[in-house]
Amino acid sequence: MKIADILNFARIQLDVPATSKKQVLETISNLAADSTGCERQIIFDALVERERLGTTGIGKGVAIPHARLAGLKDLYCLFMRVNPAVDFESVDGKAVDLIFCLLVPEESGADHLKALARISKLLRNDEICAELRSVRDPKDVLMLVDKADNE
Image (cartoon, rainbow, N blue to C red; front, top):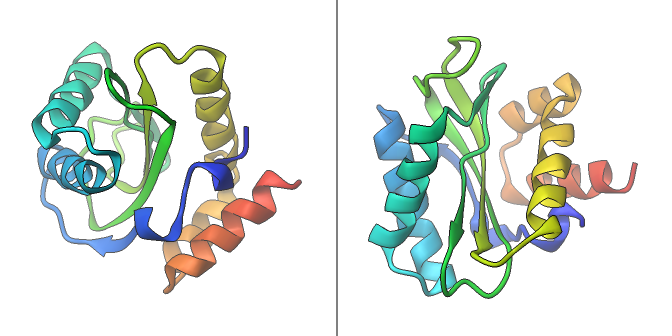
């Protein structure tokens, strides 16, 4: 499972203004609804429910919100860089500016876990995170992800 297989140009948003975790999840839900065919409110509710189980803010300014959705046919990945960073109740208490969202079919098994592992591995790399914070074009995000996928 490669991240580049489930992320595309249209699913990359840079310097999105947001003031809260809720607003970030609403923005993600709106964007995802447009390209998945799932209802915005269903996506939002699933993301919020997952956050209730525990924050997806993994530290170092990074979050990986994710949820299973009935009716979704394929894995869906979205990258968003938020500016300014927002409180995501992260494990290290730091505000979040890099967000990879993963939405998966309800019956998804190992693919879901593999995708989360790949995204997590990518975001543990401080150099890649620094580059994601500085790129100006969504194409550069795709190049970084593709490069990391092939290492």
